[in-house]
Image 1 (cartoon, protein in one colour):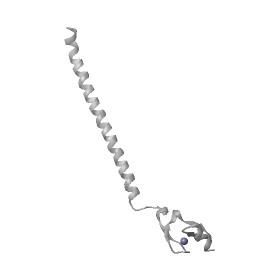
Image 2 (cartoon, helix red, strand yellow; image 1 turned 90 degrees about the vertical axis):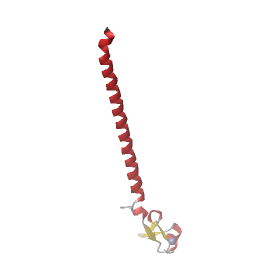
Image 3 (spheres, rainbow, N blue to C red; image 1 turned 45 degrees about the vertical axis):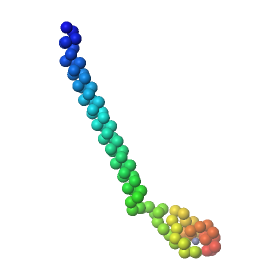
Image 4 (tube, helix red, strand yellow; image 1 turned 60 degrees about the vertical axis):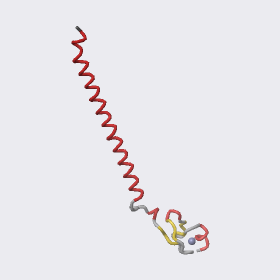
Length: 91
Ligand SMILES: [Zn+2]
């Protein structure tokens, strides 16, 4: 007798459990999508045009005329050289 009275509650609990687990899965999926979007954004930022990326700019060595990345350059007397040896030679 008692079991029959409990049956609606059991069904209710099962339905609630299924509903909650589905919600949880949905939330997890949307979180994953957000993460993916963020990763894609990062990739685009890296591949896209360098905004304010002065380190990726090219510069010309005043001594030998070679083009090189600014971040690889050597500064001497306010000028940017491709290498330390050029900076030393171009006194
Ligand atoms: Zn040079």
